Structure formats: C-alpha cells, structure tokens
Image (tube, rainbow, N blue to C red; front, side, top):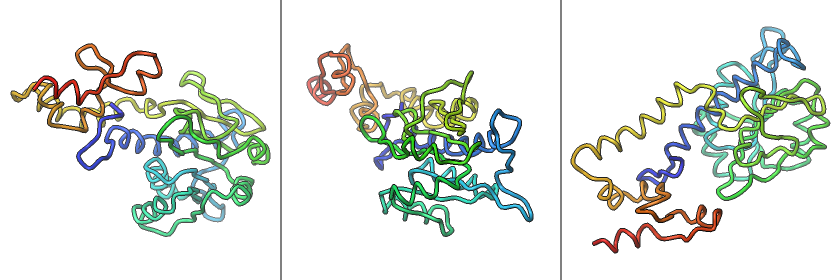
Length: 260
C-alpha cells in the first residue's frame, strides 16, 4: 500500500502514516519525560508560567516533522529542525505558518543543540535503502541524562547510531542515560485512527472496482496503482523484490500491453 501513488505523484498511504507518526512521536516523548517512567526527568513538555518548556530537536523536514511540530507547538514546546534540503525547510515554514528555528545538518552545530535537548525525534527518510546516521554515539553520550530519543526512522534502520529496533511490548531502552524509543510502524499505537485513515484512501479504489470496472482496467488506466502492484498473473512486477529474493522480474507495463 505504501507504494500506491496519487495523480499528483504523492504517496497517500505513506503521507497519512507519516502524519500519525509525527503526532505520536511528540505525545510519546511527553509520556517518557515524566517521572512515572524509568529514567524520566519529570518534565512537562510545554512548561508552565515561570518554567521553560522542553526543547525538541527534529531531524528531517518532511511530513513527520510537520505533524510533530504542530503538536509540539500546541503543547507549548520549543522546537529546532535540521535538514539539508532547504526547499523542504521553506515548505515546512509555510505549512506551519510561523517562524521556525531551522538549520542545515552541520555536525558541530547539531552536537551543540543536542547537549541541551530534552527530546530528539529522528524523522529522516531514505528513498532507497537505509537511512544515513545523523547522530553519532558520541553525540548521544553528551546528551542530558533522562532526555528522550524517538527514532521514527527505525523503519529504515534508524538515523541515530545508538538506536535498535524495539517492540510495543518492550518499547524502550536506556543507553548513555538517554531513553530510546525505537518502535517501527509507530502509527500502530493508534490502530483505530490508522485503520480509518488507510480506509479513506483504499475505499474509493474498491468502489471503482465495484462499479463495473474490473481490476485489470483499473491497473491499465491508473499508473499510481500500477506502481503499488508487486505481482500480476504469477509474475513478480516489483524490481526491488525480484532482486531481494532472486526471482525473475517482469515489467507490469509489458505484461498489460501484451494482452491488448
């Protein structure tokens, strides 16, 4: 489903899951900052009169970051955003609708900001393969004790060197005194919301199939749906999967045009 593409070239399933992940990341960080969790610093994320708010550093300026920032600002937190794509940062500024503290990923400046961060959210996305490591173990070792790392990028290996995949049953661990939360598919925490969000995208496709159009015709007329098709008539039509499992790859376009 993640490979389904809309008419404007966007990936609607990925986008909606990223929105949920961004919101969940900030709310999860708020939970782990209180002192009911092991190692928590006992901080209120948004602060209160006379007490400064928590400082959140977000790595990446995509959809996850945009959603996380809206929730963080709603709670009153202080936010810093790092990304090497200046166009994405400009787009993020416009979407949020207020000035943001942003920077390119300069290792020296990033390390400086991390020393005073209460929360770090890893939201780096890789179009192919593993996400690059942005935060080294040395940087993590210099962070405040009891601070929280939410590595949303763990689905693609993680962008923080000390991250390792965890589960919803055992979601966190502590390393160098820093709480790490590295659950893949973080949107599964709110399964009902996630299911409804996916259904809003899938249902129109099912309605098309039920209105007299068969699936072959839908595939032929819609390149975005073709992009999300892994197998067709017993053939592997996804090039990555064919390489991954050593199975012959066949172009879906060729299979369909050969039928005409």
